[in-house]
Length: 183
Image (cartoon, rainbow, N blue to C red; front, side, top):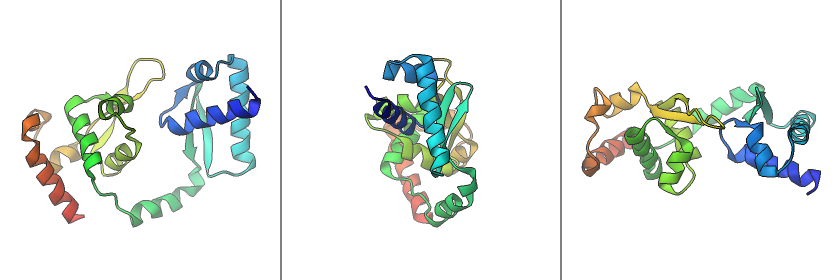
């Protein structure tokens, strides 16, 4: 496989994987040794800098992740302020999965739903309804998500023990619809 194709695969992995991913995981996927993998990643980092892309490739002790350039934060904040995110039914589904299964990883959420949940997780984090509560102690150290105090306030709960039973989720949907009407 060409160097160009290998970099393209690494690029796709880093783009699709919202959390930092360890170099060993990348090595397994592209079937290359650590030295070659590190070299390819370094070239991707250099390309981000050379072309002044809006993203940078960060290295956190052999965990790699794309993020936006910090100097563009003010523009990203404008976007967030100008388009408040509504809680859609799919986002509500993700919130329910997190509430009833916390702490839970994005991959576990995706497996339960059968589809990717990046956008819904971002929306819920932006609304302060979920937060990162730790990392799972396995390869890749995926982020664990849980609900917040804001979640309890929104649903008028004093603790998670007061969550409605699964069969009583109609009430939860009504509360969410009211919340969306207020936004």
